[in-house]
Image (tube, rainbow, N blue to C red):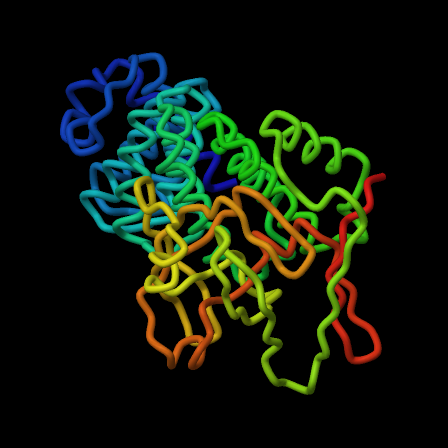
Amino acid sequence: MSLVAAGSAAAGSYLDENAEQVYAGVYQQLHIQLPEKVAHDPQVWMALDQLKREPCDQKSIGDLALLLERLGYRRQAAEAPYNFVKRCGQPVLALHKSIDLLLKLSDYGMALEVADEFMRRAPTNYNAHYLRGVAFEGNGDYQRALVDYADAVELFNDKKNISNRVFLRMANCYAKLGRYCEAASPIMTWVALDPTRRDTSQTQKIIADYERQGNCAASREFQKERYAVRGSRQILAKGEVNGVRATFIIDTGASYVSLKRAFAERAKVSMASASEITLTTANGRAKGKLTHADVVTLGRLRAADVPVVVQDVDDKSYGAHVDGLLGMSFLSRFELRMSGGFIEIRTRQRK
């Protein structure tokens, strides 16, 4: 009751005041301008008054942004917390909401500016990468969007619980670049994280549509390869990349096929459009260059246009005489079964 009384008392004292004059300093700090009718909303007025007295009051800026959004002034609701964070340093997560609002306004340029600030302040925040990817995609910069989406996936703690939105957006970016076989790969990876629930006729149709558009070469008839799993030891397998023989470690926890740079050069893996991404490995986070291999084979299993990551690593990373990791960008194109001490990799059956 005391709060209501205070608000009512304030209402009688401010209605004749000019908000632009009273809160000129607040407007300047937040780089916004409000219509008088909006500023004279009792709750908006109180939030502005609090920010006038305490320019770095985090609760007040949150309240103001929420009020402005509710009143339909989404741009001001986005720009106010952005400029507040630049001035006061916190709360960094307010930038998430700011970007969301700018994306709804289709202002991808401004959203990218705020996302860059979010990235600078929280470089390991997966949402920062994802939102910047959306802004890049909105601007038509699909290659850089792919990098941010890839980083967002790698920085997410439990990939099984990540939203399908990021994988669908990755697929769309590959498709926009005319790389339809690679477009199928993120969808396959998402399905492979929980095949029981996600391997449906709907997801298979999305994958099949991309493969049809790309005329993707793959194992047409049913094939399978089988490898013994001996305790915690690594599973080694012989394969090829672009026709060059390779020794792989089969790694279902790795998002991508990862190759040593020396081997990638021998296999003539193109680095022309490669972009640096962050990988989450058993030894922590590492960097690599995201590109693709024309063909990857494992025994009788074959896949075309496979996303791969090229890394500058030594023998300590993969082991002596090992050329790379065979991760999910290849394995997700097939069905994996574990039983009786063996892992079986087989042609995926269409529903």
